[in-house]
Length: 572
Image 1 (cartoon, rainbow, N blue to C red):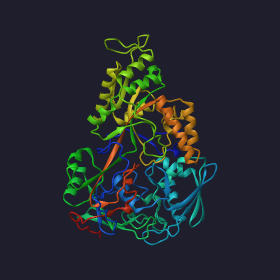
Image 2: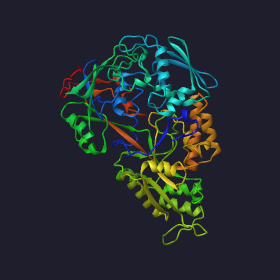
Image 3: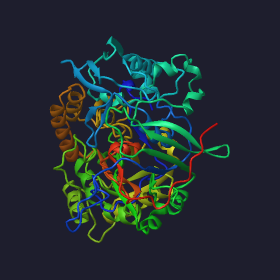
Image 4: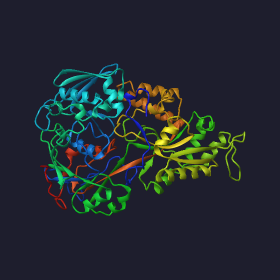
């Protein structure tokens, strides 16, 4: 999709194939318990170095290059351990020092000065300097490197100035507070890649012999005959965040979650990348498997086309609130989503620095919903039936939705809930791409069931979806035209003051909750499973599945493996 000033946006509306994630043991699970808990006065063992952690990844290896892993989650998982970035983000979405030890931002918010940590090293012992950072940025500007268009456009629009081997400056054409989001790119070593033409990078052998700066260094590929079945990594002694406790991490690739679970049962792995619904019940029966569950950066919503004069009643916020009160979301979560979500409260994700925690989920209250419709001057027949306006027009509209089984069941439940209020809803199932191209982008829909995916975007910046300027050609598909909301969003994206931004986003969320230009339904959850012998794991809200490794250098083994992983075979 094209949105205005697209080089400053990495957000995407995604019509997902299904609501991905696994069951929540509870629904507000922002951080899980340690794998080892003191009981009866027994002190949990202190972390010790050593051991091998082996994890099952669902998928296959493509290239171990952070500029080429956008479309392959298993590659991103491995790259998270191999490479370092200038900036890292904590579980609340706040930027933290990475390879950049510190940075300063000019008063106008357009200039950033960075200082690298001293004595940074690549895995081969060479120093990491400003030249490596600028080299990587230059690659991201190059059309031959297959990056998302908005990422490439951003880097083409900025200028980078080297001061010395450890300090440099980035200048933006205008202030853009979410810019630090873009500094999570994995840095590539110039001395390895500098002589390779950009158009040859995709097929370069270095993609399978990576040299990075992360907590683990590449050791060898694991082969099953000629097939790559895994990757073996070793702890990097000179990692700036501290040498990891676990000596070696081995990733193994499996075709399905079921195969990954069987590998755990067979003692081949200690962890499983993701517990999907099809293996949930089986996985819960494993006595030594611990589950870590958190919110995914995704949201299911109902959009209303506030600019469609065929359904003028949807422009009435009282009607929209009545429709919200008429939805039994708890039932949908339990019966359709198998508990794999919790009720959404707004357009900014809970657990992040910008979330206003005074918001409460709108309850299921059909009686109050009917009362609001009466307040909005709709006529509700005493004996039931269709709700109508005074002029006789029925409160009826079409809800377009993706045609996969999960969204279809959700749409049917929504229709049935609103039928209780006397609202007549016609369902229209369409393929994912058609919902976007034929309904959302041309603004030809009346109401739509969609999923918003903000993966890999820690900064909340709701501007692309709700600002007035995005109504016509941007991603404000609801065509919400609220000047106060737009002012909050404008100010929040140009001020570098995080406290000021937080207040502005609080104001925006309160106004959104009052106006309800769309109905946030659910936040899906993600479940990670690791054997109980692995300690030190903490899992807060994530912005990509690879964020589960945010604290991997503090993980440790507390017992001998149930079964040692198979001996890896190095590549010839």
